[in-house]
Image (cartoon, rainbow, N blue to C red; front, side, top):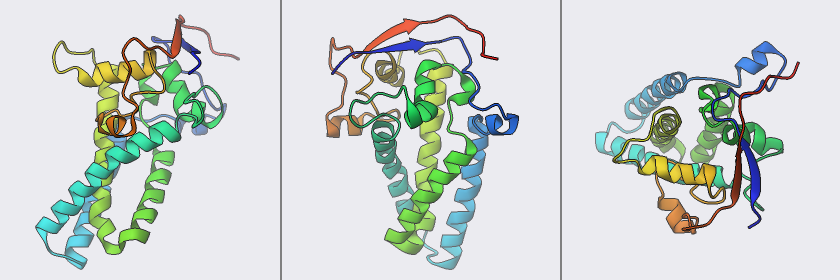
Length: 222
């Protein structure tokens, strides 16, 4: 695969995407906001399922963990085929840049480490609709596991970029660093490498597809 050149501003906040202050505000959020939103949803969704359909604790637990595990596959597929271009795994133009490329360019901008509320809710609603079409009422116990899986991913990703890598138990840091700074077409899993193993996108030793050029802080355009 052809090597791509990537400018990285490690100590710089990303530039504004919109001139409108309200629209710009919608492009940023904190993980606590997303965690709180989905925890509340999960509580009411599971309560609705338990009280209305099946008062079975074991069924709720089974569906919840099935949803939780399913998130890891969605995480991989979205990262590989939605946030990176299918043909060459690049991310520097168009939709991919707005949703993901800007993160590669400004990897330590804490305001853009989490998918904002509006697109997050939109994507979650689409998944909920798909699940409901396939499993009906069981969605109310399955979807909470799915969104809690997402919250786990979000927390791991946020921590990787905001907390220095520990000397031990640093697999997540090393694996994600390879995706950012060595092989942009490998290591799409963030919480787990399981789907990279299944689909053959584990990093290859001594391989580099990214030519990183580190840049210093620059002024925003007028």
